[in-house]
Image (cartoon, rainbow, N blue to C red; front, top):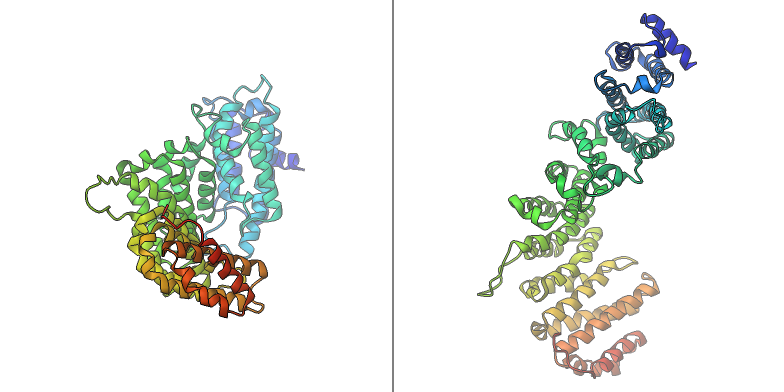
Length: 505
């Protein structure tokens, strides 16, 4: 059927069959079919379907040596244009245009284009060991980039894909890796070793025109292809491409849509983890990264705050390399101090549970990072800790568990300043013990046990920090308390307090 279509097209254009064509005639045949596919006079869905059918027949019935003739003949460039045109043809529309039927049409186009790419790659694969087609490597070099972008665009689960289009796209990616003799996508991008030149530079070159401020939203898949591709390249290869990947990552993270902010921060975090500190410190890049990420802390979206805090915690060690304390005078405030101060400011009045959990989840890491310097934030930390311990946080009690972990770390790192806060902290912990023990059914038993144990551990540390004062204050409480769970916790504190006094180490 396809061969008949190709014959009819050839007859209409006054040309011979593919195997009889001259190289220039073969290139003209491809160009005419592409014009039928994308030109202004493209004749609707049926006309485009016929053009795709003719293109498939032309590829299938053209011999390998003619399909991949040398660069002087121009066929590799023609095939590259074919691949780029097909990739663009199957690309999803702008976000504001892509609704309902449009997405279904894109998935159908992608499945059809994917089958054409499978034919083209299959032609290369069958000729791998043939001496008749020595130019296949040149042709493959021109085809690999557009085919890769197509495969990633349609293999990820997105609104413009269907089960069928994803299956075809994944088959295309698998065959592309097979043809290029690569064991993984990462190897395809960066090469088998550090000395081998991979295809990452070529892929970034193809994406670059669509990754500027004016055009990056024209194709909603571009940001995903860029992000996914970036995640595949790690140390030591990524540092060679820093100038190519940093501007698009900053651009995506600076968008007004939260999902794009998150995607951009993920890209920046990958760069922080996989580019040496020396390269990030050069030209003050690390400060650019810090300010771009720090500004997202003013957006009250828990998913965004989660990725931002994770990224900042990995960025702090690099930032601190640029700061040198000579031992004279007080230590200068760090970027970690600045971030913790803002987090605590946001935590105090915050009432949304998801945000409270997100902030509390990362608070222990900040205390560990600052160590004794946590004392700078002790007043505000005290208010946040007491306030969060008073509020029920749902069946999992994630926020209160993390706040108890934070309290324990704060007392261990700032123990000389704890004794003056003994009464306030003791009241808060005892109130928590009573509330949890009397909770009839809201909290599962394993979570209750965890809360009680964490609170007990905090009381033990508090007793050590206050040179045994807690033990004395709890003596009467053990006698008068009627709740067996609370009594058990208080006795555990008394027994543990009989050990060696806490020395702050």
